[in-house]
Amino acid sequence: MSAVSPSADQIGRGIALRLCAAGSFSVMAALLKLSAEDQVSAPEMVFYRAFFGLPVVVAWVLISQGGLRGAIWALKPKNPWAHVLRSVIGVSSIFCVFQALSLLPLADATTLSFTAPIFATILSFLLLKEQVGIRRWAAVAVGFLGVLIVTRPLDSLSGVAEHALPLAGVAVGLLAAVLTAGVTITLRQLGRTEHVAAIVFWFFVACSTVGALTLPVFGRMHEPQTFALLIGAGVTGGLGQLFMTSSLQNAPVSVVAPFDYLQIVGAVIFGWWLLHTPPTVSTLTGAALIATGGLYTAWREHVRRRQSLIQPTAPPV
Picture 1 (cartoon, rainbow, N blue to C red):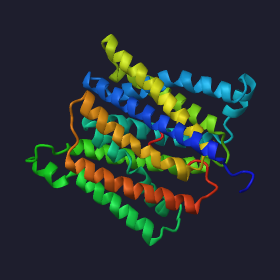
Picture 2 (cartoon, one colour; picture 1 turned 120 degrees about the vertical axis):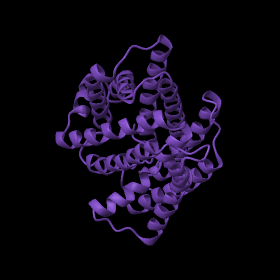
Picture 3 (cartoon, rainbow, N blue to C red; picture 1 turned 135 degrees about the vertical axis):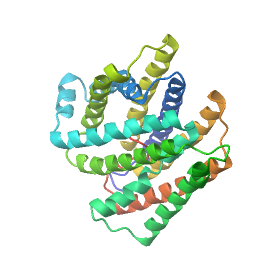
Picture 4 (cartoon, rainbow, N blue to C red; picture 1 turned 60 degrees about the vertical axis):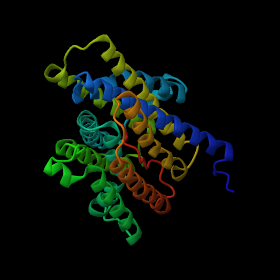
């Protein structure tokens, strides 16, 4: 074993951190879905999630970088325009993610978000001219079969099925996945020059700023319990981001990435328990196929890019 290879204890720690990330993101999504039931709009979610998550991120940066001087060095952008591009795509992505949460059942919205690795393969082929072999294309096909099963497009068009998903929600959910895939592409470029603390911090700042600008149009007063949900979503979202980032510092992405798909399990449980929305057979079957395609895609990406440090399979929210 090489000197840089992670030990068994490090790998175990990385897996534990990734499990914490999956749990945190599952709780965040459930809290945001509950806030949507209280008429909180997607732009408000973008703002409050980032605003209340930012103190968690700042605390992490200060601690991990050994104080203010180290934090300032880590947060200094080396390629500001790359951060701008990542923020534009990322903010658009997270807006669509939260809009999909408002329009779709929690389990279906979460499942569609995990088509992002499949779209990332397509964008890598189209934009970066990467070679995609037959096995990765087969994984893409399996993932899209899962999408068809989850969304049931013919049922939605006919409007006769009891559990047909709204087409608007499906479209926004898939657009969110495409944009998240675009974020994955930009993160590959950013990771070559930027500190991970800078990537996380400036994205939260961008979400807070854009979200604040939308509040005069979309913001409204809510009950105290609704604001409590939003605060909880911001804190758990910030913690989830940090757990996910820390997991990559302890174990290879190919080891920890599969645990991201536990968020689908969490969405099914929380949707059933808190929102009284049991999963349909179509949702469970399609989710299994999407997870299969996504996991294989992540594995092939690991094989191709063993030195890559940032290859998220979960929505980088």
